[in-house]
Length: 459
Ligand code: PLP
Image (cartoon, rainbow, N blue to C red; front, side, top):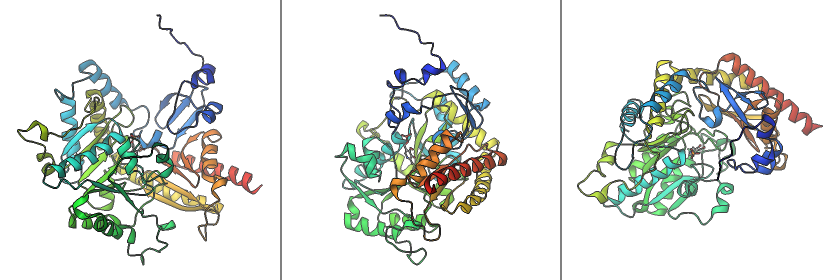
């Protein structure tokens, strides 16, 4: 057999002949092959497709490329590591870069979260976190503490455990039956309150209900409450400020751990190092991913307290944490992670993210003049814009109109700006190196897309 070398033309990259052999994430390939997007190179906050068209990366890939697409320090660190050591067996050893990364992360983690298991993807992190708390309770004389309570509308990944914790029916339906031992409660979604209450008169019932859920399930059976600090995949839903402190209190009362899914919000995305800093509490277990190596390598991790780590340290092999992934702690990925941390720290980029996020929020207010922007929300450079039919009553557009999807598609295809979209919202999350001028440009392109879709809808 000979291996055929490919030397494809730009047209060929876009042709169905090749694309039909691909499967993208959550993407209907039938539609994709009609309007394919194939990128070839990138620089700073810009990427170019194979036709040579230039796009603004308004969503950092998927909340990932916080340093943009051409950071010299990270590229050099990865190249140097390739010449040094490319792999170290995770079942026999660790490696110098992994040790350094864990120590450096320890310096920026929420207080006390000093033990870190390094992994490669966000779903690996959330899955590992849930297994960690279950084995922890198993080995501390509370073997019935297994139930994980999470929230409707949250997203925690696609492996079967992470998907079971996820609260989005459309993501889960094809894979039922999922795992046992999971329950869900309502999310904090003030403008569409699931209890039909109004903040602050509601007394943050969505947080207080967790106590009732733990009592119903039996505190001896509940291991953890898992949630995202800001709900990303449903348009950056931000809880009221009391939400997380109330959750912390309830979890302490019933010896239930908080697993905070910071896969998207972590590593500075909210304008602070962690979403938990933004909401002023410390979780028991923190999952990180996405921005951790800023797209230069796959990298994720789970951080937890030393008291938890100690439960796995023993003469008995069977008490070791029974979990691992082949690429966890890979030295090239860890070298990228170290360089990302250094860049974020030395260039004060988390504060830049905070400042630019505030600027972007302010500029986005201009879009309210179209009468269809109901809510602009988020923290740092993760901002969601919810569209409504009537911004006085907040009445949503009919689902079949797909207003947000149309705005998002228009942004990408006509305005050449990458954006995340859903039927009722779009989200922006540019790299932390974005400038005010580039933010002005993003807001202007989003405005043009809204105008174009309104013209279609209103005739
Ligand atoms: N958790 C959250 C909050 C996410 O947004 C995602 C991905 O979007 C994941 C977990 C899963 O991460 P991954 O796609 O790297 O497996």
